[in-house]
Amino acid sequence: MSLLKIENIVKTFHAHTPDAHQALNHLSLTVEAGDFITLVGGNGAGKSTLLNAIAGTFTVDEGIIYLHNEDITYLDETSRASHIARVFQEPRQGTAPRMTVAENLALAQHRGEKRRFRRSITATDRQKFSEALETFNLDLENRLDAEIGLLSGGQRQAISLLMATLKQPELLLLDEHTAALDPRTDKQILSLSDQIIREQNLTGIMITHNLQDAIDYGNRMLVLHQGQLVREFSGAEKKALTPTDLYTYLEEVQS
Ligand SMILES: Nc1ncnc2c1ncn2[C@@H]1O[C@H](COP(=O)(O)OP(=O)(O)OP(=O)(O)O)[C@@H](O)[C@H]1O
Image 1 (cartoon, rainbow, N blue to C red):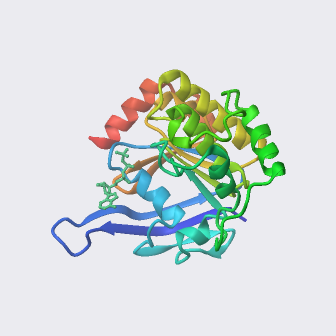
Image 2 (cartoon, helix red, strand yellow):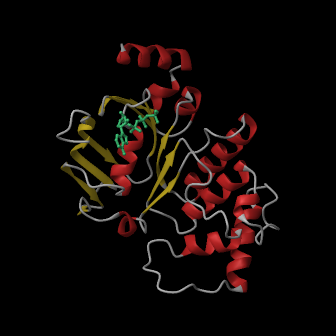
């Protein structure tokens, strides 16, 4: 049984207006548990729209989305959040900047639950958060009481990653999550993501414009163009590619 099955989904923005744009065009995809997929394609190809469709940011116009054989097509984003976690490009997205690291992590710990009141953070919670942060080697374990907004972009992205994976999501969506970071921090957060995915045996889909990263990470690579998946590279096929090969291929697709 596959973890995620997408059948023939369509999403048109501004439908029935002169600005109508079909961002997803009868797209189908099957994701097996344990897959780590890199997703590439030119600007506007529909990559973020695909992740939005999976996360439930909107309902697709046509098609069906199954998670573990359960039809989730009409399930809202909050209900999907206990299964599907996401890290965005912008470190501020997905965290509450005026709240502390510990408060943000406590919220993440209850992701997908209908919250009626604020739960207090216990000593056990703090211990758990600080142990998890210690493994990051980013000096974050002693910053539990710092406001997230005061941390560096890299530190915030590390927290976002921990928030997304604290409850072991079934599916982790990474939407160019290192693109706004400096090259050193980019590498650090990327290898941390890879490590978490492996250690927790998660299933992941990562959008990236860095062709070397698309080749280096994951066991499958998908190419999206004009809302359709136009090519899949298996792990072995992608390892045989150079970034120049991939660049040339993407140029051909877009021409
Ligand atoms: N909320 C929206 N409203 C209107 N149009 C949208 C919306 N979201 C995406 N689009 C359009 O859908 C198309 C696909 O956008 P999407 O962001 O999915 O592309 P992408 O492949 O992620 O691009 P990039 O690499 O530039 O981030 C684009 O033409 C975009 O303008």
